[in-house]
Length: 92
Image (tube, rainbow, N blue to C red; front, side):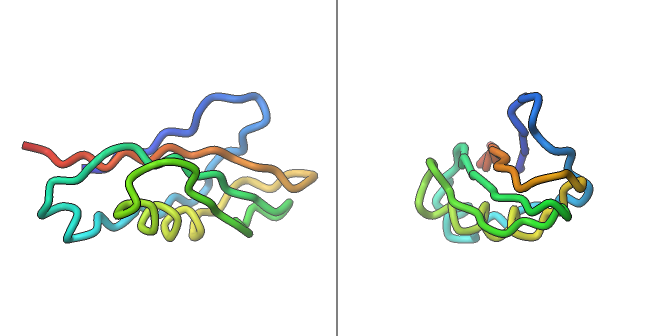
């Protein structure tokens, strides 16, 4: 199970298209889970131009980064940085 959270800040931009991350099969089999914090740079037109995982398990960060790269945000007047938390839950 995956959950996604956008920390609440007044300057955060609304997500228009959210692509869920693919839970890495090896991490799932090894029951590795947890939160991955991703910082995304968003262009004025809403496309994500850069992503960087700032914390989280190294087996999970590529999946989180790849998903957020494909997100689309609402247009704005300037480039902005949006912080995203993606939680990979191993289940029972």
